Image (tube, rainbow, N blue to C red):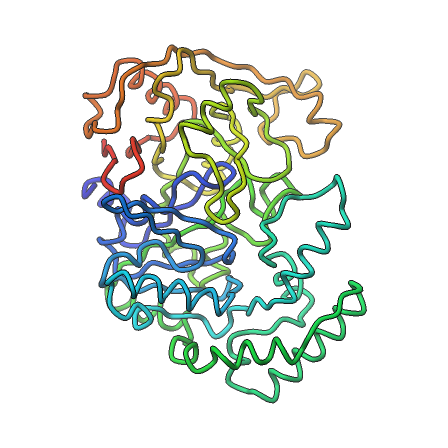
Length: 428
């Protein structure tokens, strides 16, 4: 691991290269002990990063996954949307688990937007109105919170410092949204909820941009933790079936106020197969026994919603597109152990549309139906690999599979996940 990190520099990003749920949290936890700060730069509590430590499961939604390390400082950047009561619950759960007063190690940007209860109501109402055109959101209010931000009516954490302004803005927003969405929103209840947590949140608020610059100037190391994944990015993903913020490498700059040259290395996370939660195009989806086997063996149910994930074969064009756009230097291939027991594996190697090779997932229904996918077959393996800790110990067919993926995505695979525990990793 030390060699892997030394090749990347002092400030490193971890981003998903597929449709999320690739296992980013596990690698963040594994390597964040080598960093002074771990930062979230986009999204909200719609993320779900699961880490297993000695059989105990921790699920992170907004706090950076690296907070399990007792000296790590977690930064919640201006590009996030923060459900404040949920944030305090996460802090309490970790503190109760014996990690000290975790709140002392959390910094929240004054410019981060506050996610309120009415955002969740709007989110669910919008999904209801879409009928069979549902996007498949988590219902956590993320989209409506970002919509308020873009419409310039959002409430930021800094507004907690001015109670009169806070009340005024909440009343205005509740009246506006009640009229537009036909909902009955309770401004006084929203205000009461915020005032109930205000004194606990205030000490965590700071100018995180300035804080990060000063810490980096002092020689501190920083890990940037992505949420969701490139194929769910608002600009580069399978629009409109995407999240509401820039979740790829570019989001670090906007969501934390960090200049591009400070990002010295990027690790991309990719599952040894693919999954997707919610609606939207998913080229290699398996709606058969093989898909069920992947779902069962991989425990593929959403950490945030509990929804069963759609499962499919590894997708080279989609993953390679993400690697190129995000500037990935090396890949952590996760959940290789889930493929044990499958006699044959398939890998999508090429997309063709109307006789022309394409390099993005088609996002219109018409084009997606015409998409032709080339596959390459690989023999599987029977052995349980969850206790393997070196590449040479892997079954021959598992090694061949990894090396083939590495060649096709044109990016070195330098870490391999072989089990749920935080230590079930092979570093090459």
